[in-house]
Length: 249
Image 1 (spheres, one colour):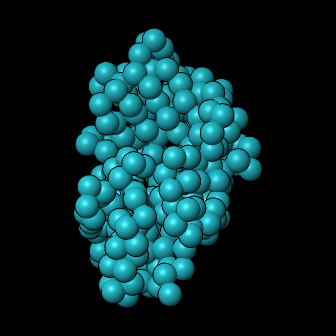
Image 2: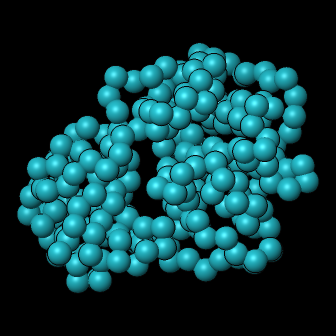
């Protein structure tokens, strides 16, 4: 579905939360991208049909007035991608989308191990794991982590510690659809089944909450992640998601 500032141990980093912006019938979530205050992060919330050319032009003017000089979008589906490309955006990266049925799967068993609810004191370790697991473009900072946790009405944030944080996941649910928003395993702990444990934890939580479908995405060249999700029953969707970029000046 995402890709860091590291702060002193046990300190809570300050961050600027994303704000909701409405232009006509369209709504977006906007904030600095990876702490760069001249690059906007833009997440369209409403359907592609709301992204009319005058709406996007007004949005660009507003972002420029706020001091942003360029914009990078969240991962968007093809209909939104096409609207943005027609407005002058270009594809910066693509993501492979995968899905699986949750409702029919029942409770999934795993071979052992424990996850626990993440706490504030885990944040530094989570950011370190994320920075080590992803290349710079895909890393999350504190703002990105907060966006992943709050993008859906309900979410679950889990960590594995031994004793430091070695892996974490964020899962969200919106009605019948569940999202594996983020999953990362420390490089020195990969190959030990921690990713599988977190995926199964996410699917079991979604099943208990009544979700019917689970979605996840990953860069197409991330063979380890693709293999993990496919082992856990996910199937590759025909259409990829896209992250887009546009200069505002």
